[in-house]
Image (cartoon, rainbow, N blue to C red):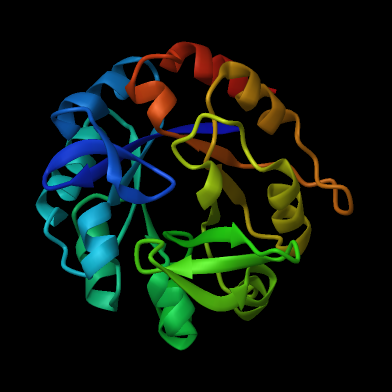
Length: 252
């Protein structure tokens, strides 16, 4: 299982939010410094999210994203980037700027046909960003527009629409767990693994090496599928979890 340390951008700075709440943020300074810290510790991927763009659709941090991608590429570290990616031009600009995998979230939910065309134009270089909240009945509802809105569609419905596309991954975030360090949503992740054949990257709730070992050992009940990767944000940014320890925990 691959470790993807997260660098979330807000106003040009690296931050972490709790459950996507812009009022509950922690600041971690220069995003390039943070990304280099992860690369120096041995990370092979960095996960970058433009939170401003996710909320408004305006790519105000696009230059920062491509700067991180360029500097990471020089160190043979791949960047997965998302947040406010709404058009084919956005995807082309990010890939042209050195991003290895672009995450489509709101655009894929609101315009599946556009997402399908983009995925076919860039096979393997596009990921579906699937962020969810659990409804009272236990079903998982996909959220959009920086987690500010519910889509009215379940995770299963979204995956069914896009299952035949040459996606590089599905990046699954349990919103209620994100930034809380309370542990990942194993039930939700198992359901996604059994629903799609696309590689799955988990996000949300990882607070310890033990959480990562649990994710690395996870096998879905029906298909026996495993996770491709795990995004870790706050625990690495605040130093409560060492990158080297996290990488070791991700190993089989």
